[in-house]
Length: 196
Image 1 (cartoon, rainbow, N blue to C red):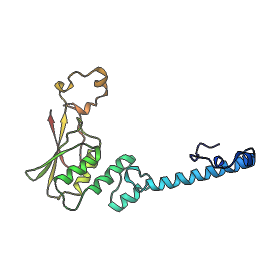
Image 2: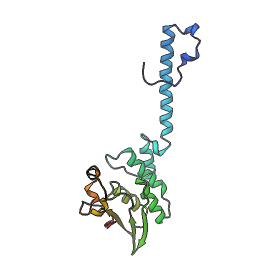
Image 3: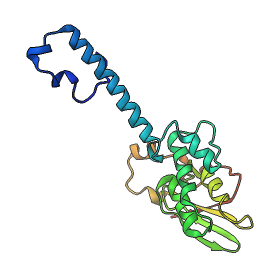
Image 4: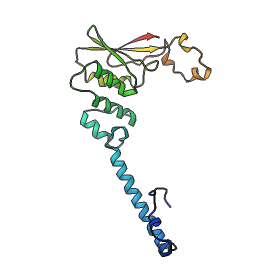
């Protein structure tokens, strides 16, 4: 029998002494159970599409509605983050909106401030250049006034940041997090590095 089954088979509702020994009736109820389970699963899948965090095949609908063009090869999680960041934004763009849009990508709490006609964004999360930074810049660029520049302050590690790291910890670290590691070349914005 197929692994797709309802939680309580129909045969459990029928008295054993009447149909319990009938191979025909058993096959019939198993077939009904399978069809019912398929319908329940389809209904759950449709319901999941109304929630952005669980949406899969309906993501293009959200993207089209918001005017987003997904990057080729972007995962569901990356596409959902872009959709959520666009929904977080409003017509009036302020530092809190920029911070909320960027926080939607990785859950960190970026520190944003204005200085000399630019928005400075200090990423307080992990060390190095985050993989989502280009998408985050594109999302913020559609919200902020065109005359404002953007400067991203990224954290870089030094030897003193290693502390009591083990060999396993060092092997798991990306070279991108260290001073001298490669920074992503970005289409918009300026990157400055800060040491902690």
